[in-house]
Image 1: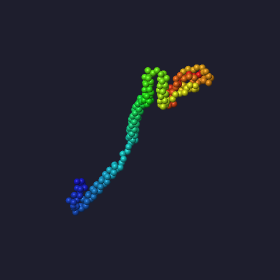
Image 2 (image 1 turned 135 degrees about the vertical axis):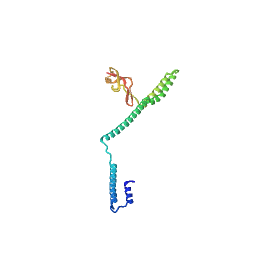
Image 3 (image 1 turned 120 degrees about the horizontal axis):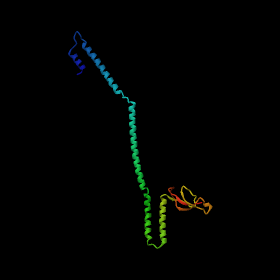
Image 4 (image 1 turned 90 degrees about the horizontal axis):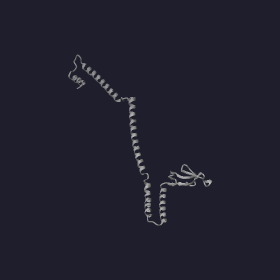
Length: 205
C-alpha cells in the first residue's frame, strides 16, 4: 500500500474536525499534486531515454569500418588462394595429358609398323615392302596434318631467319639463287602456323 492509499484511508476513518475542517483535504490535494508532478517527470525522463540515440564516436566508426574491410580482405584472399590452387592443379593435369589424344591416334600406326616389321622377316619381294612402308608413312603424315602439323616449303625460297636455320652457304650455281635456300638438310614444321622446328638449309652465296 502506497502513501496515497494510506491518505485515502485516513480521510475515510478520521473525518475533519470542526476547528480545522479542510486540513486533511489540503494535505491530500497537495500530496496528489506533488505525486502527479513526480510521475510526469518520471515519464518524461523515461521518454527522453527511449528517444535518445547513443552517439557513435568517430573512433568507433573507424574501428567498425576497419573490421568490415579486414573481413572482406580475408574472404577475397581465401577465394584467390582457392582459385590459385585449383588452376595450378588443372595446369598440372593438362600438362600430363596434353599429348594423350595424339598418342592415342598414333597407336594404330604403331601397330602397322609392328606388322610391317614382322612381315619383312620372311619377305622376298622388296617392292611389296616399299609399298607397305609408303602406305604407313602417308598414314602418319595425314594424321599429323589433321592435328595441325604443316611442313614448310623451304627449297629455292629466300632465306628467312625467322623460320630457317642456315647450316652453311655455298657458291650459287645461278645468280638468281644468291640469298636463297639451295638445299634443305632437315625439313621445318609449323604447328597451327607456329614454328616448332626450324628448317636447316644451305644458302647460296
